[in-house]
Image (cartoon, rainbow, N blue to C red; front, side, top):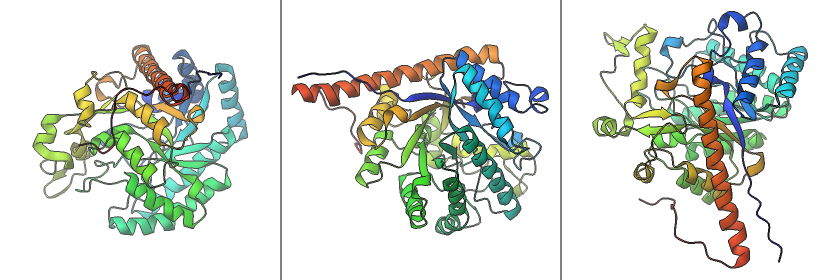
Length: 412
């Protein structure tokens, strides 16, 4: 018998919103592709082989003021002007010179927003992102679905079929897929709605995918799984992956964000998992405040319960893992290998930085911290790859039992 130890590692990437102001606005506004070039070099300096290139409406064009955003977005890819072949050639040359590739492009916005003009603006922008992805040879775009808060959730399914499916047909025409991140976005507006992105959990993913299949775009609808959002909703990764496998949808997840969430037990005791429901400060005199800084308080629906973690910055806490109050990174990577229908060696693991205390807009200070987090994620994936190769490949071939039980899905 000839045995080989062949661990399979994921492809490590980082979302460029990790440092929004790497290239100062006064330099990148007149020369928009400079920001992409500098981020590619920054990623190379951190020994991170890929970037998830962030696009967003320019601050002058956005309908959401920066003061109202919990996690500021980055228009590293500036699409005020269409991304043509000449621009693509410049970026591709920078990719070649730095040795850093693209995992995908990202544009996170509410694609089902109720205002028709605002929605059309976002749809038009998303098509520009699709065009850029195609020119750069990226296989996917990552984003949200969103929600029309003036409609019921069932009505939003109908709206998804009406307005989002055509968007997926545009993705199909360009040979790319759309990976949906599952954040419920509770503070996206000043309403009392918690689920402001209808693609927030496996149940909705399956319902949405069934609609997509009916229209021939099932292959274009995929999930970019982020474990921080599972923690926010009291879920754990292994159980989510087991559920998808049990339902025959283990293929839906095709990418990962690596961002943690650390639950505040005091906040849960005060408000429960519904978040702060009153006296937040986003309503003034019986109506939503017109002040964007006040509207930021709508995020107390989330932040009283949890705080984002940049991987590696939260203490190792096995009890918190068992209570689903922080991410069990090693089991996350093991469960992906054991339960999902994915090609590990061609799956991206994208580091995302939204830890408020560490959101430093200074390359010299933030760079080493991001490099450490990237290194942490690489090491965790390598450990999971080694364990999986040993336990699922080598030991069975040798007729040697695996020891112990491990973390189990659905265990209370």
